[in-house]
Length: 176
Image (tube, rainbow, N blue to C red):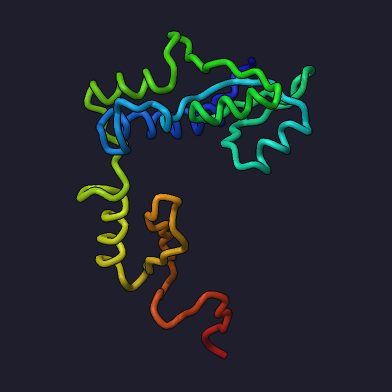
């Protein structure tokens, strides 16, 4: 495959986040690898590409080729089996040093790379966003926009000149 750095970084980020979280024991049983994400490569037809996206698979960095569309896929083991059952061959992604995304993430974590945090722990991203909004009430408002399949809040932060008193879609202009 050709070098597709931008999309691969997104795919590596997703896979690395999952691997680091699992390696730290913060996302279920570390001994069970069934929910762990891994990054794969494949070349698919335009129809297969559309079906994978419509069915909610993490399809990263599509690039047209003479043989179809080259893609990276971020999948669990069961998702990989589901993709392969459609007749789509996938190969484990490896970087120039031969490491998978999960191996690279483990190596980085062991070396003290601490960019990745859990979501709902005491120092997690959820707590960070709640604290940030509390400290910046004049410009930020936290909105719960849904829940995950695991019952975790999906939150968004809305930024505006004055987040209080204005509602979504309020397009009134000040002055005359």
